[in-house]
Length: 455
Image (cartoon, rainbow, N blue to C red; front, side):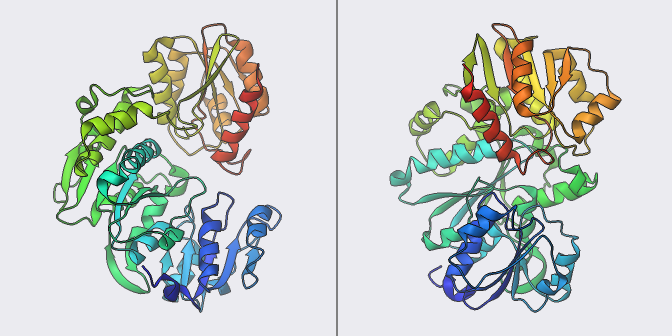
């Protein structure tokens, strides 16, 4: 790990996807500081990426190719760093591989450069952020007990994992949230050379859930989607652990080398946990099982969980306005996630009192169950713009009061008009943010800003 600068100094690296979330910026800075020869390419324009480009202004040797990708930037290079979401069948990725150039990703490259660090990886269609944060909070609060430093990385807002090479030491622990795209980097090749169809997986893997998502990316192929997710346990060895929620167990191959642990909600009895919903109790159970593997006393775990305030954008209670409680579930970007949020509030005694704000970009998912749940358990629904919204309104009958609005600001005002004292407003999009927003975080920040101004 101490030689990480030597590994990248003078290397010709193409960064594919600078982005605005901070991860691309983080590892681009890291490579620049190591003395790498950098080409940064992104389909977004220089104007769209102005904040990220400005943050790199002091690094004069970076060549920017923005508003396009060029095949020539994927030839005669030592490495390509692919951002999450770039398809593996991209002509540019194919060009790199044709030229035998390693295609790497942030977290997996970190793992290859720091094999002495214990990695706890968390994936799942839903629940991975909650479980990742719970595990991190529990282990971080017990660093002295563990006698090891604990870090967080992966699919965490604004956090690049690779720069942690500057901090980590042998036996430190990294908790990583890993989506299906990031897990693509865990197979096929090691740093600097091809090794065929091999790869590696985290020492401790948590698989929270599996359901249809990103079908626009995977072209309706659930097997390909699962194949990427499965990298989290596929290459585990004897002595490693795989923790799953009950419904995931049936998806796991019986021939895995690691020890399979099924998280039981009964293990959370006696825990004071503020986040509503049985599915969140199952997520908590996953975190509790990880804590057990580190031999952290139950009393210490319970103390951390009791102080846990929940996550922004995940069934987060914000405030009450004129007797109406407002919840932010912005990160519910799948139909199942929004259904889970509706059910959680229903179980909390809000039957027929939920005014739902949803809508956004279609992911090519089956809408039948979602529409049925909304019609059954919600009082009214407000739709924000997007191809998913248009698909619902064109093909399904919404039996409860509903209205399509032009933007999020109008959506909040309309929802308040439809709600009565004692009702709840649930902002749970069920669709992707693209179209109206650059990403889901931009949508989250705008919603929080709108609600906080309400009196």
